[in-house]
Length: 400
Ligand code: CTP
Image 1 (cartoon, protein in one colour):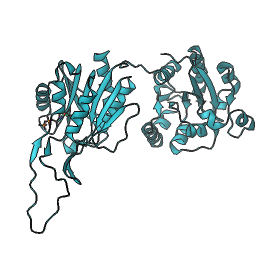
Image 2: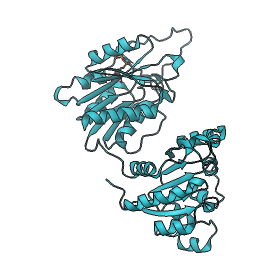
Image 3: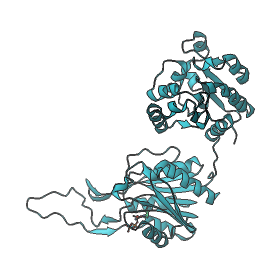
């Protein structure tokens, strides 16, 4: 896939690096990608609308209140006219405006009004880049799904050395290509993922459950879909939203989760990230159990649930080529995880320490160890999304 025939809305904000936008336009045009430029007032101090227009071969927009521009193409329409919005260079000022949701000029209005993905290439003095305000703005923008490329480290126009230089145009082009024409190594593959807790009924209003949020499993399903896989996500009750581009089967109990998994087979890869309850109540009451005065608390008889991972991993010809389990442990992490891999016939185990002090269960980050037939890899502390991306990339190396 290429970016030929795609369209980029390029916002050029103020900064000495604005001249590099010209090179970026040349590279994009060379790939057959259309470019419409928007120049901020500060950006116009560094490059002229005429040079942007000459290279993009397209009208350059500068003014929010231009009647001519509005009659040709309203600013809302302009904000949605491209496949991707790129801000290069992105000054501290425009990043702060984006974080705050300001819309006082054309560029910030377009960024607030757009429904397209946005990529920013920051460029500023290193102290401005490292300032707590910019750091907080970047964290907020990243959490909102804004894509970032750079900045690089190096000598700056102000004779300082450090992070803040605009990434070179070829690297910005590569980031644009990754967004507009992503590699899809898992195209044509089917991935099955379980996620979240299960609820085991005691009576119609009470259940046994655990603290799983579903964040890690859902992120894995989303990452596999991003790499082109057709994904079936079997999810227990969670409050995180269904990932985009994934078929989600909502279940409550372990038995329902097993049935949904078996119905989803065959699959090329199965990732069992759900925290399945180990037991269910032998005879769940059909009506609400009442507290009768003086009566003893009810005794719950528990029965083992089916092991979904082990069942699928031992399903003979229907076994997915790659079966991956999780081992959430509070003690003897590696020994327990290795034993689990053998006992459940999994190919890989993603082991993590879920002791309360780690904050992993229900949290945003994870520290995992990937156990494969070749040994153990210790991964650094990462956002659950990043763990998911790395795992999906590893899966792609096996299934491609
Ligand atoms: N798993 C499953 N079905 C179950 C229990 C677990 O599919 N009924 C899967 C989980 O999704 C996970 C792996 O098995 O991928 C490990 O689950 P875990 O609960 O940590 O292990 P258990 O087998 O329950 O062992 P223990 O409770 O002794 O740690």
